[in-house]
Length: 243
Image (cartoon, rainbow, N blue to C red; front, side, top):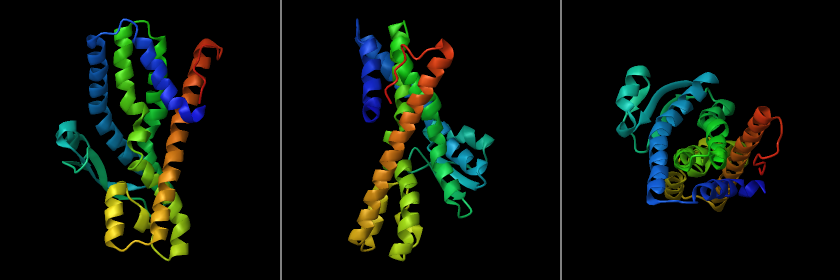
């Protein structure tokens, strides 16, 4: 079932490396995850900026924590600033009032989930060398499961863009009231502003829409992986086709 595909893919990959498993193999998987995370985070943040620019927006400030190489990136990309309250955050950007540009800005990093992360994860059972398979499994996790990691961040924001556009005229409030890339901070702000039950309903609806988008993103990655397998092998036989 497509809702269970992320779980099934992980279990398939994990099961394939368990025979003869040792602490060494577990450490290799952890190393793969750590290396992937430190490479993926700055690429993820830069993808937000590029998504905005590519669709007609403007970027003036992208904050990245120093541990992820922000100082070096600043020499290449003048809009990068060293230091952030998060691993990274796009704090200075202008969509020109376009929700499509805003959505593209949020979604751009998750193209890596579709075209890199999910295919990597699904390739693990077909890797003959189990130590290498363990490294690939670890490396795939931050990228393949990025939508779930970002469920209350970027994916909430995407959901809130869609929901707020519908809710704002009904509530007589600006769309920005419910838009945020941090649900917890938004909840604090709304509570301090005397949020109504309708406000909380809109936030809940945005969370659900964001979750649906996360499922759709992973499913797109699963479909892409199956398409790649068919192109390479001329048959769907042997491919993991559960989406």
